[in-house]
Image (cartoon, rainbow, N blue to C red; front, side, top):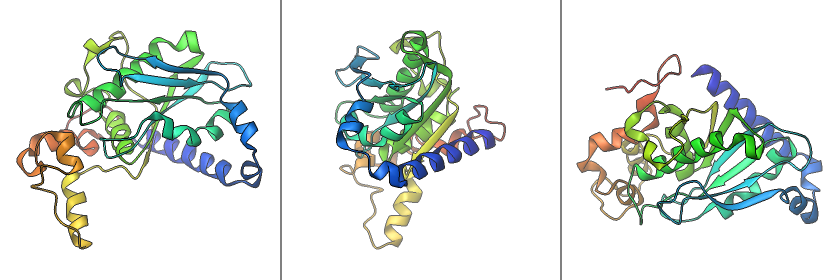
Length: 247
């Protein structure tokens, strides 16, 4: 995992510096819109739900194959969509990355693990369609914020976990392993997050049936420890970066 983590931090630092540079701050709206003109919108990556669509944005300059960033939106697993992520993608596009933003089934439509099944189906779609879009299928980065951060971290550590992958969703000749993950403030251990919230003076959500975690998991998290463990990205971490589910 050290190699993957290092790549992620280097990537994150580079993108952050680019986003904060004076030249970037002076970019006009017209220039930003021009960067997104090479687009394919609302492309289905599976046919089980209207939510299972993605947008592809390719760099205007340069020739592929391009390394790929797949961005996953946040929103408590129950709201938002891929349209809110576009502002993150200008700098990667300018630096030669193909970018893919996905929608996934929200918790109001399907409970966990549907969301990570969708993300992994999108990863396999990217690999299967690499030649058509000019993707470098050997260089894929996942990036997400909040709930999306949780999903990319989980997908990144569980690339070989059969229980978190539904190959019947398409492109079963490809795996869903990726090279790096950028997790913007995504939760890992649901119980620890609840513990920290209580320490800060908040109310525990362990027994709640209406909170965002319960909505995602389909039950109060106090009642389903095995399923909660399955949703924790650290469950699947191993020293050599290979999939190994911890007890």
